[in-house]
Every structure is written in C-alpha cells, then in structure tokens.
Image (tube, rainbow, N blue to C red; front, side, top):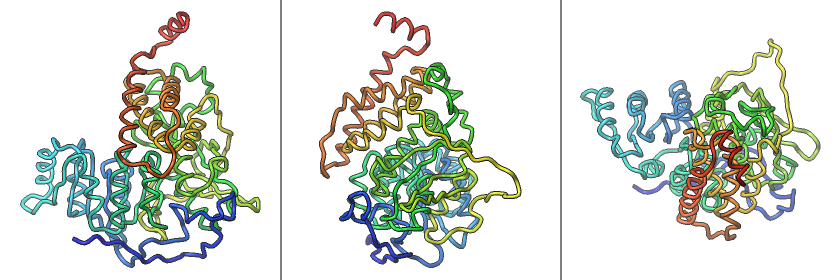
Length: 447
C-alpha cells in the first residue's frame, strides 16, 4: 500500500512574523503551530489510538464513542496487561487492527476477542515490541500517541514518516528524540495533547510568534506542595501517589510529586514552540483550572482554563482546527471559586532546574535524564529509594554523563545507547542508597 503523505496545508489565520522576537528571525515554523492545518479533512476522521487501555487512551475512546460522526478508530495498541479491556474496546469500535507489545499476551487476547466477537471474524493482531510502531504507520488520518515512556519514540517517528497528523500525548518522544522528531515533522503535523501544551497551543492561536514574550507553564504542585526539602525526606510511595487533582498512572503521578513532569514539560514547550528556556516559566496553581498561559509583548496574558479533565486536550488533538462540542465539562460560573498562583520552590523541587540544564545540553542528555528518572521512580515505588534521593540520583547520573556531542547527527541508536547506560547506572546507584532515616543518618556519620 502506498504511503499517503498529505501536502495540502491551510492557514487558519496569517502566520507572518515568525521569529521577530528573541533573536529567532530566520527560524522556521515551530513544531506545533495552531495557525496551520497539516491535513484538512471533511467528515469522519480515521484515528489510531496507541496506549488505548491507559488513561489517555480510555478517555480518547470515550470521546470517540460520543462523537461517531466525527471520529472512527481503525486501530488500537496496548502493552498487553489488560487484554479484556483491549478486546472490549476493539469490539465496540470495530477496529481493523489490534496491537500488543507482549507476544505472550496473544493467546489471552485472542480468547478475549473471541468472547466479544463470537463467530464473527477477529481483527488483525500485531504483536511484539514493534507492534505499535507498525500500527502507527497504517492508513488513517490521525495517530494519537498515548503511550507512556520513551518507548513511544519509535511510533511517533513512524506516524510522522507515514504522513499522519500526530496527536502527541507521549512527551518522552520529544524529550529523548527532539532532533529526530524535528527532522521528520512537517509544519502543522503535530498537535500537542498534554493539558499544558494544548493550553499553550490554543493561547498562541491569538497572535503571531513575534508577539510572544513568555510561556507560563502551570503546575498543580502535586501532593507535596508547600513542603520543604526536609519535610519531604520520609514521604512514602503511598503519599506520593495521592495526587490532589489528577488520576494518572503511578510513574506520571510520582513525576508530578517530584515535579519532574513539569521539567519535562518545559523541555517539551521549548521544542514544540521554539521559545528559549529563559522565556519559559513555571508557576504553581493548585486548583489546576488554568492549564498554562502565554504572555505577550504588550503586557497581556492569555490563560486557557477548564476544570481538570483530559478529554478537552484530547479533543483538541483529534479535532483541530474544529472544536468538539461538550468534549469536557465547563465551569459553573454561578458558584464561587478561588484560583491561586505561587512561585516554584526550586530548593524543595530541583527537578525543573535540572530539566532546563539537560534541555540546554541537548543531544542525549534529555534521554539520560528521563531514563534515570524512570529507574529511580521504580526504585522509590518499591521502597528501595527515599523520595529526595530520586532527584539526587538522577542529578548524579546526568553529571556523570557529561556534555553530549552537539549537532544534528543524533540517531535512534544514540538515544537507545544513552538510555541503556543511564538505566544501568541509576540501578547501580539505587542499590547503594540508604532507604530509611536511620540508615541515612548512619551513612552520613560514616562519611
């Protein structure tokens, strides 16, 4: 089957003025540009959902089922741990293809599908570590990448190469493979789905890039907002998983507790919108009503606000430039509410500063940061690493990695090699880290 690579692009509004601000006069259009539409289409859009049994995937499917005239899902991918749910999704959506990363999950998946389909023909099944990548390149209009972790990079690259519009919820694709993504993506081809970047995307639509002074990324502050570094020393995994606003997977929830997620989002904002790091600010907003803001050169600030619900950003990713009516709840303005904003405590939460550092280093440094963090979060959840030691260990791994080579020669092999080293080094360090306050006191006394 020939690859369909759309060439038609429609400007939603004039996009003149790229790069008149901040010394970027000759810069090309940024990766994510709300003024451009990569592949305009009328009627129903065919969608592939990667990570369909996760939080993003299940909410996306809810949105699709409520809007059958707008969207049709043709393929689903999942890791393979929830085959019953995957089979149910496949049957309800009548997809062509189902993909699982775990080959050993195929027998259980076939059984679950047979339970749903009865005597009807089953959908095509792809299995193995490359299954999602294969699915991302199949015929469709939009690929929603809702996979968690850097394993989402290969499917992102496959979707871009195949000429699909990419609704990107997998921030790690950009974090670990920014230059690779930039080399493949066409103007307007990526629509961000993270709530913060979907908010920036919408706010940026009101002006040109030349008008932008600053991006302001909001953070809920997680479950430990207001605590000092000393007060964080003995918090437990159960404490970290008790997020006050969002219901997410364990890794993302711990990343919210350490604010690593916000550091990753700063790097992502830089890569998506081509705004320098010193013009991307983080502010703590506990209510999570304002998802991010854009400050313009005339002093005005535009904030995108909705009640916390990921179906709104998902609808932007799938439907842009049209909006999807009633995609998510709106505010009830008959009820009083208070919205608060606080500066970030960089001493208690050093992750954002470290993320800026690795983002500026570029090359393989962001991949090392991300991989080391994933290993340290896993160790913390298993009780093998105290909370504060997560970022201390990640910092040490980043420092040992040093300054990567610069230039545009980054390859997938480079990324994988850097990740492998970072994971191995992080595991070595976590084995030698005291986990209790008594152990840490004893270790400090001996030092």
